[in-house]
Every structure is written in C-alpha cells, then in structure tokens.
Length: 221
Ligand SMILES: O=C(O)COP(=O)(O)O
Ligand SMILES: [Mg+2]
Image (cartoon, rainbow, N blue to C red; front, side, top):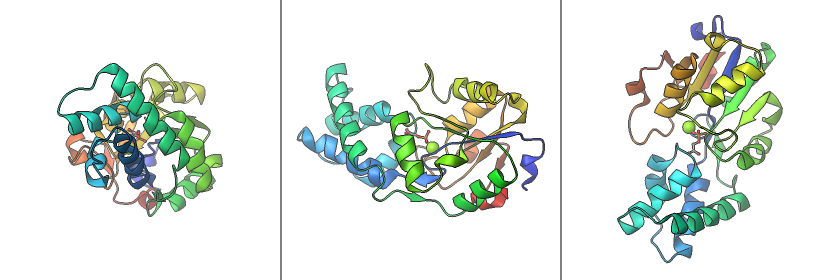
C-alpha cells in the first residue's frame, strides 16, 4: 500500500481524467452540439482544456470560444441540452480506462477500503461508464456534478460522502487530476493525491500542491 494510505478509511475518486480518458467521447458530443448550431467543431485538443467544471460550463466555454463572447442563457441552455443528447447516445465509444486503474480499484476493494466516486460530470452518465468497464460494484456511493447543490471545488460532495460512510474527513483521501479535486479535498479536510496525466486546464496539477502524486494508480496498491 502507498504510504499516503496509512490511516485512510475512505478513498474518493474523480472520474474524467483520473479513472477514464473520456475526452474523445466528450469532444465528439461537443463537436456535434456546435455543428447543430452551424458553428465550427473545436475538437479534442481544445475540449481537453475545458473539462473539469461539469457539462454546462464545458458548453459555455465551447460557445464562448466559437462566437467570441459569452452566450445568452437561452442559447447556452439549448446547446447544453443538445450536448447531453449527443453524449447520452455514445458516452463510451472511445472512452478508455487509464493504465493501472483496474488493479488499483481491485486492490483497494480487496483491502476492504470503501471507495466513492465524486465527479462533476452529470450523474446520469456515471453508471453507463462504470458498467461498461465492470466497475460499478466497486463504489459504495457515486455523486455527480448535479447530485448536490454544490460541486467540486466545493467540499460539499466529499463531506457528504464521508458522512454517509461514517468516516471522519481526516481519514479520507481524494484522488484526482485537477485543481478542483485538490481544492475540494483540502477544503473537506481529506488528504489529496494527484495524477498528472488527466485534464487540468492545461496546467500541471502539482501547482495545487497535493499531498502526493502518482504517475499510475497502480502505485496505490
Ligand atoms: O465533467 C467534468 O467537467 C469533470 O468531471 P470530473 O470531475 O470527473 O473530472
Ligand atoms: Mg477530472
């Protein structure tokens, strides 16, 4: 076990950019939603830097980029709704687990550590993705960006998860790829572990000064 796991009784994982490389499917849905509006498709490289604050903010960034100004609420609503339809049709065509994820989740489960998933992605997409990889049963609780009144970087989802599982926050570990994960973990009183391979708006996640970093989640076990 990784030294950071000493004293840890609950491990919370981020999803996009931490467990799965989901940008190919996210970008396909963003591209389709923009094309519906007669706008240019941004493609994977741009979308990669916009993921992290949930799907509405993702579409706000995409629209802002495409038209050069903040979209009206009505236009954002329509394009976000179109994104949800496109993504819902194909959330798992080219999405892949990162190397090391399966042995890490299996090992932590076998060690008896409760695992939770805390993502900013809409909750409706969590089960299809976890089921596709046979990982749904690994998690005692899954929270999406729309499950509670506030999402990461707010600590609420982590505090909620710790309370539901009756674990004190200081015995919790938040594992994620972005500054929002590290900020949420720190504010919740969890310890924090970063992976450097995901999405962090084009910046190294080490700038957030997590308590630890692993190149692969396999290092956890
Ligand atoms: O959907 C997003 O914007 C980010 O999702 P994540 O919290 O799983 O990284
Ligand atoms: Mg992430």
